[in-house]
Image 1 (spheres, rainbow, N blue to C red):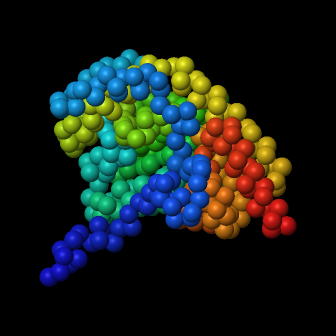
Image 2: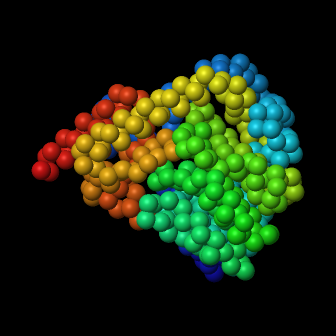
Amino acid sequence: MSLRDRVNPHIRDLAPYEPGKPIEELERELGIEGSIKLASNENPLGPSPRAAAALERAVGELNRYPDGASFVLRRSLSQRLEVRPEQLVFGCGADEVLELLAKTLLSPGDEVVHAWPSFAMYPIVAKGMGARSIQVPLDGALCHDLPAMAEAIGSRTKLVLLCNPNNPTGTSFGAEAFEEFLAAVPDGVVVAVDEAYMEYARRRDWPDALAACQRRPGTIVLRTFSKIYGLAGLRIGYGVADPELAEYLQRARHPFNVNRLAEVAAVAALEDDEHVARTRALNAEGADYLGRELAALGVETWPTDANFLLARTGPAVYQRLLQEGVIVRPLHGFGLEDCIRVTIGLPEENERFVKALRGIREARA
């Protein structure tokens, strides 16, 4: 029997997540220099200065294991969010908390309901446990079709995943739609609300998903320090759940899954409200600028509550932008062949993207 025959079929047939290449490698392949990366939704301001200073102080402690309970971060976050400490589950990015949900809840033949296109890891974590990924198309405005998602829940559904704001579209749903959806979900089905980008949201009727965790058993909110806090390279995220669900996830968690530097930086970043405010303001200005400029070019965009913009630029634009040293995210793998996702960067980066796109479109005319 070959190794292939011994591997679980749901792992053997799984298409892995494909990360973007490092900017240095792309420049080497294309023979260009001075590229800008607007593909991975990173904070263009970098990490909080407080977090950077905390990291420097902590480097001499790397011979010590991390605090397996993330005690300091747990206390700080519970106070800020006004939740009980036992409701918090930490992971190596919010992705790991998503994996913990799959590990805890799913068996072969179970079903996970989620929108599509949405976060690429949703079908991967479902199929990685042998479960079925039930993908509900977005509506005509490329928003979550919550009524259709409620109808898609069946007897084998163990988990529903909501991405708000949605990645890669940037669209979001409001409080009323969320409450109506929760009321339609059967008891016993776990609802996970992925709010990786929620700190950027500008809509006024934002759902209070944390409150839902307090009143509905089997509800969890996923958040991260990778986006607005600028700690993507350290990989730290968390979930806020009802205490019973959180306790089961803790059983599935590996010890020391959050490294010492990640926790130290997260505690410091959490206290830097000024850096968060600067990032949010910069992002709002950039989103408005890109929306105006792309509209002037005749490029269709969608309203965004995240730190990126979805734009219908037409086919082959991704490769042309690469040649101009502008790296964005192509979306053919999401069924959006004529669209790109562009991270909102610094003003000069946004201007360079617009200039490059304008030149490409003028060359086609």
